[in-house]
Amino acid sequence: MPHAHHRVCKTGRKQGKGKMFRCSAECCDNDRASMQQVHGCIERCHAPLAQAQSLVTSELERFQDRLGRCTMHCNDIAKDSLDSGSKESQARAQLESCVIKCADDHMNLIPSMTRKLKDALVDADKKTS
Image (cartoon, rainbow, N blue to C red; front, top):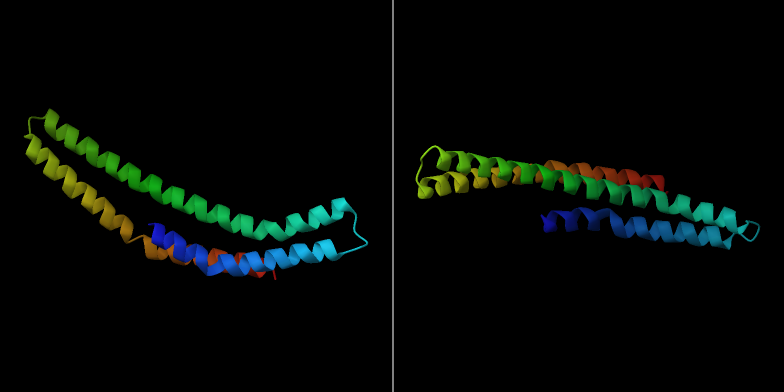
């Protein structure tokens, strides 16, 4: 998961940060603007990148929450199996099989999530242009 996060962030972050800092520098170069106007200008420069970072964070949190819920479901199945008289080794095998399925299912979600995040970063980059 960290590798996908790194790839997604690396794609648009450097370009976005460069534009953001150039935009902020232009705000500071405006000799006629008041401090309040310069501050507002800089905030507008930072907003698209901050929104993109927020989206990446929320998508990753959502992904982790879904994976966590899936593994909790697996734990419940294993506990129910033990409670109904299954052997520990059988419950452990059920748990392992279920968790592996959770991981596989969620790994399959990564490409579409990556595309969604890349598209959002491209959109954020366009907003700073």
